[in-house]
Length: 136
Image (tube, rainbow, N blue to C red; front, side, top):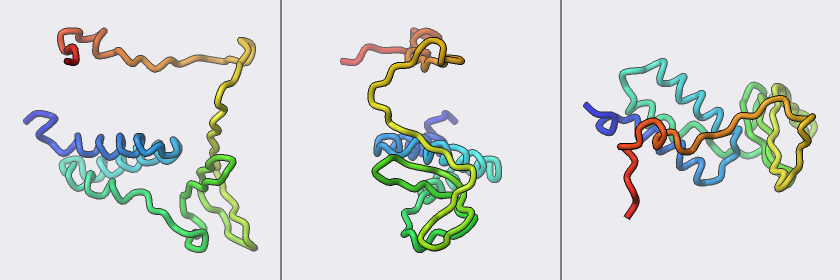
């Protein structure tokens, strides 16, 4: 059985669809974690993992948020991801909160840089060039 004949490509397709919908990267990070957790629970049933993966994120109203929920809150200033600690008086308190901002264009001095990680977009070509075919 090849990789294509399994249900794993369907799981990858779910993630790629989320990326193509310009979803918040914090949601994608949690999707990958939850898909991995489901895979560990039922490793021989990737079809079940794929079926469940499409239901990992659900839009809800502010009124439906409960303490203990993991949520991504979006507003005009960006998105915040975290665990709901409390919901009181028209305010939501998140613990373990993370925020990603779109900075547009920005400048960073060398002194401010601790480390750099570059995404290698030509790994297949460098590792196994005979598998890279020219597009026609």
